[in-house]
Image (tube, rainbow, N blue to C red; front, side, top):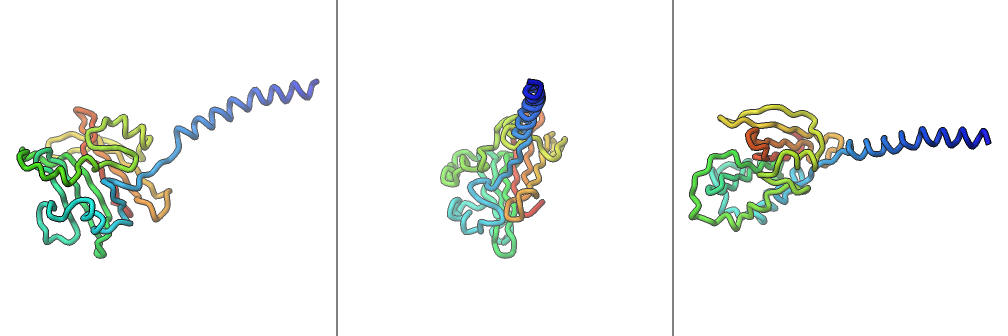
Length: 191
C-alpha cells in the first residue's frame, strides 16, 4: 500500500512536468526554409528560374552574369537572384521596397507569376509579422532597420543546424508602420 502511494505521488509530480516539457518542445521546435519563389538556393541553377520566369522579362543589365532580376513596375515588386560562377542560385530575394513606377498598362508580369513569389511554408509579401512568427518561431536576432526613409523591423533566422545542404539564412523585413512583410531573402550558404 505504501509503495503504491509513493508511485502515485511520484506520477502526480512527474507527469505534469513531462507534459510541460513536451509542450515547451513543441513551441521551441526548429523549422527551416528550403524554397522561395519555387526555387531552392544552393541546388537550383539559373535554368530552373528561366523555366519558371521567362528570360525575356529580366529587367536591368542583361550583361550581369551573377545577378538576375524580374520586376513588376506596376506594384514595385522584384525577384532577384544572385548566382555563383556555375550559375547556381545562391541568394533569392523577393521585395516590395523598390519604388513603384506606376506603369500598370504593361501587364506582362502576369506571365512572371508574382503570386508564386512565396516561401515553401507559405509566407508572402504583405503578410503580417505575426504570421512570420507563427511559421518560423522566434528569430535568432531582430531589431530596427532602415531602407531609404522607410523604417523596418529586421528578423534573422540562421539554419546552420539544418546541415550544409540546406539554405542557411532567412531574412525578413517588415514595415514598422504596418507590421507587414516587405522583403524576404533566402540564402545559401550565408549572407
